[in-house]
Structure formats: structure tokens, C-alpha cells
Length: 394
Image 1 (tube, rainbow, N blue to C red):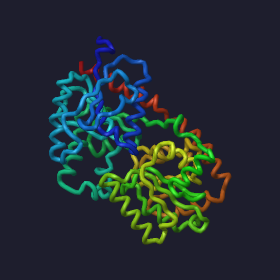
Image 2: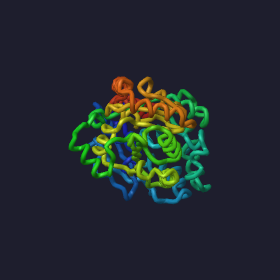
Image 3: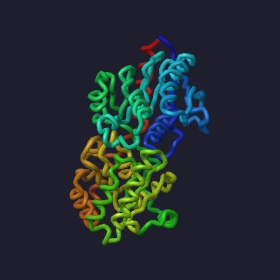
Image 4: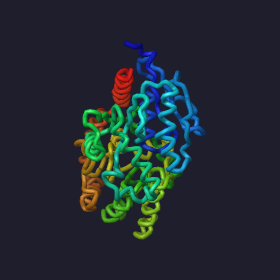
């Protein structure tokens, strides 16, 4: 039996430095918890060559090693880097197991490997991804990253919904796919009713005194033009309750969704009522959540759903889509509606703006629901998987 200090775990942190993404939140929180857990493993953090992290994300004893390829390579070169150079490096480093926490898999398996597949939206809903997987190279890159999941020792995903999609569309042995729910950092996401912060964010982002909020990204599957329609058909505009959107808009898929939403807002004459904001600092995000009338998510597909849980942690009522993983994650703590039919959202919007008893009931249910999701539990279960794969490969 080998000792813990002999177990060498590689972690691909190539996507961790990019702010405002759910994958970044997921990976950073787990790494922070790894730093707090009682273990004696050796960690190697694999980063892109020109994107050296400023710290080791809580794992102070970890070794930082550059990946043998760049995130700026074209799709064809990236396939070569991920599928050939990456496995070669893992063997040369003497890893027992490598973990890809961001939808990356590999065909060549010189060491044990575990991947977190957050979702497989381009396979289960290809029409939602066709606008940004818009070349043969990009499509092939995505397919190599996903269909190689069959070669993994274990696949981690955030919901039973995603687990079933992975086994159905990728043909992965169901015994190799495990659901580990993600967490919410309730030390960060908690109510902030400070009048000073409220006035600060109002001035910084030119916010109204009353608004509803959605956060995440502007990707097409977020269904934001639909949300604009539902908002427009509700009583909110005439009640001077505005709509605020927050999320990254810097990559191709996000930019496409951002411009589609922006154009739709202009066509409906709602430019003075709807605000499209980019990624904001975390303290501002918490203040934005805390001062919203309610939070809404109209997604057509979610592999988990961190943002409604963040809203619940900030004591904000939630209206969510009744599809994909959202009912599983939000339970009885949200109102649900069909993301293809605005009438359900319109009804909930009109009711929530008037019914304070319903608002309070949702807030209380949300506080109960969000306590089910803890990053320490997520990290401990993830580390158990990495350890078991490492020992099995010895």
C-alpha cells in the first residue's frame, strides 16, 4: 500500500484564470477546499504557458507547471496539443492521475484520468451551439474533447440530469459517471443590505431603484431575448421595475448572444428599461443580487445552475426554467415556467411584484435549499475519486 505522500495528482487549471465563468467558480472553490483538507498528496497545477497564475488557489505546496500547448493555438493545433502533447507530459511528470475540471477528455491514457463534464449541450441541443461551433475545426475539437470520455477512469458531473445525458449521448459506462453536486460559498454569497453599497452600485452601473436580475452569461442557450419578451409583456415596465443582466460577453458564443439580446432590446424600444452589464467584481455582484426584487433564469439548458443558488443565498426569490437540471437543483425553492412560452414567466413576474407573502416564502425555502450545497463536500468527494483512480493505477 503506497503512502499518501507518494500519490501525485495533476490538475489542468488552464481555464481557471478567466473570470466570470461557472467553470472558474467551480474549479477555484474546489482547489481552495483542497488546500483546507487533511491530506499529504503532491499536486501539480498545469497552466497555459503565458498565463501563470498569481497564486496556487489555496494549495500552497503545489507545483506549477506549464502545459505544452497554448490556449491561443487554432483548433487543429489544439487537438494535437490536447490529445498528443498533453498525455506525453503527464507520463513525463510521473502523475498517478490527472483531473480536467473543465469539459476536457483525452483518448491516450498514460496515467489515470478523471474529467468533469459540466454539460454536453452541443450534443444534446446542437441547434444552441451551432452559431459558435461554426467551423469544421471547432466542431472536431469539441468532439475530441467529449467522445474521448469513454476512455476516462471516472467522469464527474454536477447533476443527475447531466449524468443521464452523458451516458446516453457519449456511451460512457454509467458506473463510471458520478454525480457530485456543486456548492455555494455562503461566506461570500449572503445578503448585503448596506445602503452605502446599494447607492454605490446604483451610481456605478446607472441602476434604477427597482429591478429584477439575471446573471450567468450571454450564451444563446441562456434564452435572453425570450426573457426580454416576457419582461416586456409583464406589468414590470409600467411599474418602473427594470431588467438587469450580468455576465461575460468576451468569447464568440457570448458575443453572439449579447448582440442578439442587445438588438432585440432596441427593436422593442426597451433600451431605457433593460441594462446589459459585463462581468462585475464579486462584491458588486453580491450587492446586485441582494437588491434585486427577484432573480430569473430562462435557460433552455443547464448542467447544474449555480446562479439561482447564489441568488437564494442572498435571500432573493427565484423564477427558473422547468427544464434540464434546474428543477433538480432548485427543488421547491423556486417558481418554474416553460422557457418556450413567456406567459408562465409573465404570470410569475406580475405575482411576485405584488405578493410579499409569496416572496418571503420563496426566500425562506431558498435558505433551506442552498444549505444542501457545500464546496467542502464537493471537494472531499472529488478528492476521494482522484485518490481511488490514482491507487487503482498503481
